Figure 1: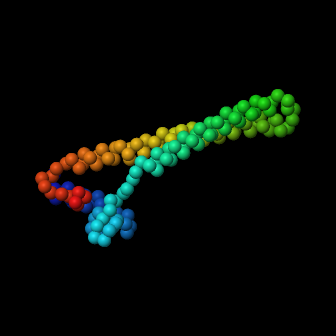
Figure 2 (figure 1 turned 90 degrees about the vertical axis):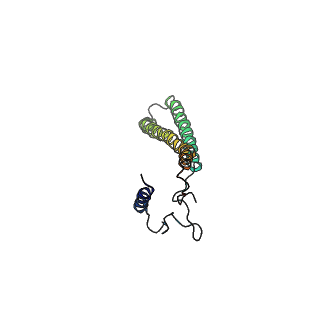
Length: 146
């Protein structure tokens, strides 16, 4: 593929990705300094990893709450048979168990997904950048290398 053809493809993609007024007319994304341009997107693994930790903490707390709910409910049955409140507690216990189990499981799923996203930003993106930076084009430097 000729270099000119590659530049045309990149220009077409940039036009399709343009978000309102954020793209610098020079084609490099939002301007960070007068006459210069910044990358179109900045991402890091930090926020994703932190969110993953929060999801894991919430999963742990929810799981402990579920265990505590079951344990506390066992003690109620002993000396309160026949009371209306005991019947009400027996009726609502399964719904609370279902809700807390659902929250716990969703936090577990989010923990894994967020951790993987953080890993991707922290490992895969730099690996791809290293491969791209290793491509030599005979002395010509594209705009993003300059």
